[in-house]
Length: 472
Image (cartoon, rainbow, N blue to C red; front, side, top):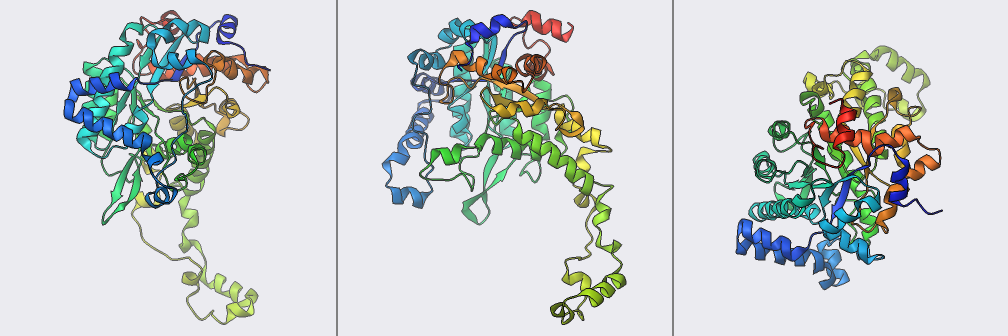
């Protein structure tokens, strides 16, 4: 059974559909022209050469050379080709604007496509020129259509200073109100530049990123992440794009989410809402359950149960003497606690209570810090989206804040006008109800984008519904 067409579904609903992660496909010559205007011809030419290397370099290598260099297999066609109109729509804002009613989407937050690659540029001057030029390109291109769409600015995170400068340029000078922040930075290992470690901006980060979160709060912008884990240890195939792509956004989002949470960012910045896009919500349901389970056994009030000093050494020795196998008895003259891993070590209190920065006193605190501050972009055809709304399974009967993400413009949406209908199939199958669907496509996106900026939708197609829902 085919999914409903977007316009047909929209006629049935009494609420808007907000798309929190559509995609636009850049027209590269025009974007590079803007980079040249912003940063100069020399950087524009360097960026063009780098793009050619990224896109075509794998094909120029022999199979043995790809393996030797660890060259990742790129996608063989990453954009829709079944429908010429859809392919053009992904690159032409005016055409998308004309088709929004047919798609069933009232308003779309559009994320860049080439922007996903820019965070990996090591050269700071080139990286910043590429990001700034891309942001200026999208701000100009989408300005006439602000009633139905808004583009996301790409914000590199190699250092807090770089991130803050680009945030202020994107928001203050270009007027953009959505930020796509790099969710991690690959940093070289000292003494071994061929090796890298992944800095997820929270636990063990190379810098204090609190000034970035503070700037987001001041600029009234929600930090959102759309980074890829392709190239990480288990996703580094030189021959299979699918092998590298499966779960890549979920893995990257989970790593950043876990790092920010344990670093106490949601406690220190209660006004911020963070979104992790295109990875679905299944990983978030698992992470919340795991965090709660770890806190219950390793939090401040529970970790003492694992202290080896609680063991009665004399009784333990007696039990080993009386019940130990012959091979055990040969070694029982050695200090027993040390030989079975019960070493007594002294560590600082904040190293023992790894949830200290979250200031959790009860399970409800942990669930609230997670479920109310984090949002999860879910593609329309993902059946796991239903898990977010299942109070029977999620800790303390909570619902996670899944937000509808069309992903239009990319290869996994072969027909744009059926993407909303694919999301509705969860209702048709009885996996969620109509109220859940309303939250998925309207209530949760509304809460995400207006948490710091209540006027986010003013002047747009959804202004009236947004004001009514917010009680303004």
